[in-house]
Each structure stands twice: as structure tokens, then as C-alpha cells.
Image (cartoon, rainbow, N blue to C red):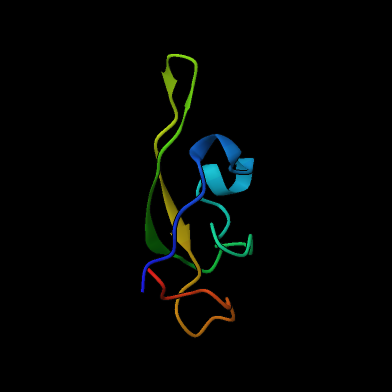
Length: 66
């Protein structure tokens, strides 16, 4: 099952920086798994960034839906 990723321009600073889960916003201080690449643009500036999700079994309701 695939979960659509939000537009990169709509990500919070923590998610954009890889500090928080792209799905639930939880801290990834204990580790995270790749969730894909969020794509976005503001004007001529591309904001594409790799985003991360909670590790499976760590409490994120959406973990493992890559």
C-alpha cells in the first residue's frame, strides 16, 4: 500500500529537516525509515527532499505504508 506524500512546500521545518515523521510528526530521535521523496516548488525554487517515517513497531499509526 502506498501513502501519498505531502507537497514539500507544506512540510513543517522538523519534517523537512528529517527530525520528524512525515505521517504523524513524531520525533525520529530514535531512528526512522525512508518514506520517499516529497516534491514541491515555490516559484523557480525546487524544494524536493527525502522524508522519513517512524520505524515499524514504534507507535506510528501509518508506519510501514511506503
